[in-house]
Amino acid sequence: MSARLRLRLPPRGDLAGAVVRTAGLALMWGALWADLSPGTLAAGVLVAAGVQFAFPGLAPRPTGRVNLFALAKLGVVFTWMLVTANLSVLRRVSSPRLSLSPRVVEVALPTGTDAVATVVANAMTLTPGTLTLDVDRGPDGVTLLVHTLDADDPEAVRADVLALHALAAAAFPSGVRTAPPPITHPQEDSP
Image (cartoon, rainbow, N blue to C red; front, side, top):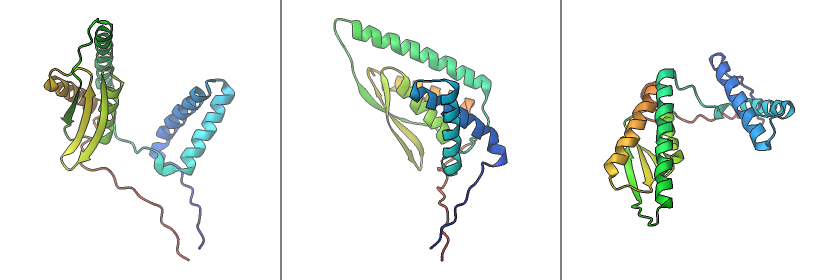
């Protein structure tokens, strides 16, 4: 049995995406080494380019356009959520009596892309007092399980998550996908 090594370059339309991914991975490389010197970043570029070249199937597929105005609005709303959540957690932790009512709230997201569901799930995890426990893709769409530190009103939590989903869907308007893309495996050559 002989296996041929097939090297594939990124598609022509994805060259900009490959450059952005390489730059981002090189910055992560420098952050992991705690050194952003030109030599470390150059090594990061080589490692990032090598990984993308060796494993082309791991690169995310382009998900469409980004609405910059809606993305800025999402950033402002998310920053406001962070500030208010931090103040709420600070107030609760510094009060003499710690009164919490933790709860897990199930939120069914409207149909959308995996990228939008990922943005919403990560935004909820990054917000103090909330944590995304599970993301489940079923035939009816995506469902999030969100743990909240203080959820007197689960409907308010659902409304916040759905509002964030609407902002993320407006920022990343790439159409509706009902099922994840199939995973393709390279074909093995027979003897």
